[in-house]
Length: 320
Image (cartoon, rainbow, N blue to C red; front, side, top):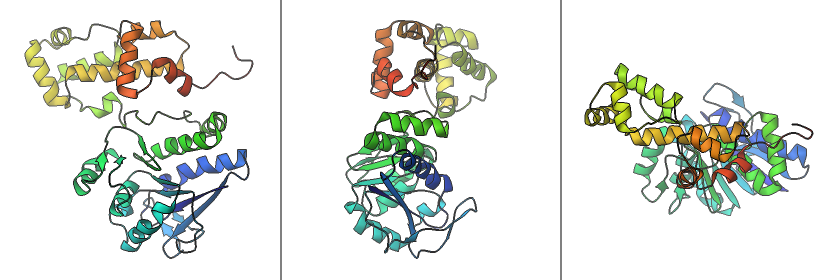
């Protein structure tokens, strides 16, 4: 049996707590005796989450059982934690077989020195702060979660569910993790190196109407000619002026924006359709399966066929 201990504190983000707990609780129901789930706060008293929900922990941290998996959630309270919590984590964190954070829980771990010399991530809005305040931590702002040895950190809120599913899959296998994901109506799990933002959210929306229209065109026509010359003509600008204006207003180059849109389009087709790899590569603007394969390996660290195998649910028995 693996004890999962979740640290609670005032102004914690409730979904950072309940999301992963639902995953581990689901695993325990499917495989009884697998996980023992406990929550604890410094004094054992109720805590009030950032949404106003009151949560009553099982015990004080001092009385909590030694955990296999120690999980530190985030929320406003994580940005200025009680020094006693930091001290407790500094002493007890290294004893856990797995140390996990959700969202700004990574800031708490970093404050206790538990991320020094490691790769980590957090909510996109606080990656810069984490990197600035803790230079010994290699902050990766893009992935939804990062695993570095026994320490795992995840991005904002729902990414804690993705990380918890990955941990359950590691412990109990794909079938159990898939059953939980289906029950929670989520993907089996998004790959850890999937970007926190879609291309449309990661880039700013252009203020000038011709550039906004080009952004929409790219999203709706990933398989078309999306070179700078073609896009500039659509915006009625010279290629040089277009490239400069696009970057100034969106924060990224046209080429990088197109790359992200095409990758997302290909991912969705792999997840949601039975189309062949060659067909998807053409529809997504890659032209050839090899070009799409290179793009997937560069951005996601996995080939398209493997991505589909891992992240597209298998058909139900008897389904056609």
